[in-house]
Every structure is written in C-alpha cells, then in structure tokens.
Length: 67
Image: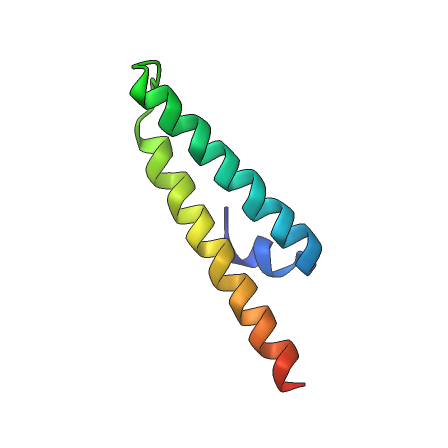
C-alpha cells in the first residue's frame, strides 16, 4: 500500500483501514503460533502498512489543527 493511496482517503476510511490492518496482523500472528502461516514476510508488510497509515493519520490530524 502506497502512502499516496492513503492520503487520498478520508479520516473515517483511514481509521477503518487501520482497524482492518490491525485485525489482519492479529490473525497472522495467531497463524504463526499455530504453525499455519505460509508467508511469514506478510507480518512485516502488514506492520509497515499499519505504521504508514498511522503516520498519514497523524499528518492529517496535525493539518486540520493548523487550519
């Protein structure tokens, strides 16, 4: 997921995306514990997507406070 894609989302959509990513990360961790996870690099990718989305959310919140 690219940062540009996230910047185009509204705050509500961005919060929903973060929630979905966190849920996916949780499910991946459960799969890892049960030795059912085939693509272990997916955990890293989702963690980075969560961080990227949170960064964009913070940028948008700071921009709205300045206006």
